[in-house]
Length: 113
Image (cartoon, helix red, strand yellow):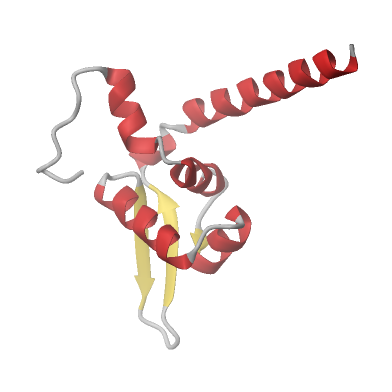
């Protein structure tokens, strides 16, 4: 993480600071399944622009969540994976998935009633 950034006193606010962007959560979701190339991530996420994906990956790399590996090949190959710190967010992402599944089921039940 960058030395200039002062973390909030509240742990929940700190977590939100690290992953609150919609794209960061989707990047985490996809990288929890393993290493991916930039084009694979972009395809998997969907409607994200190249510029926005690049900016988010760079920030996540600075924050210590993502590792970027550049291979000295022609054409260059770059792969992204989660760091050990990034992988600790699995429980957070899993909880979000579980809650989203529950909420969607609740909404469907209300609409069916």
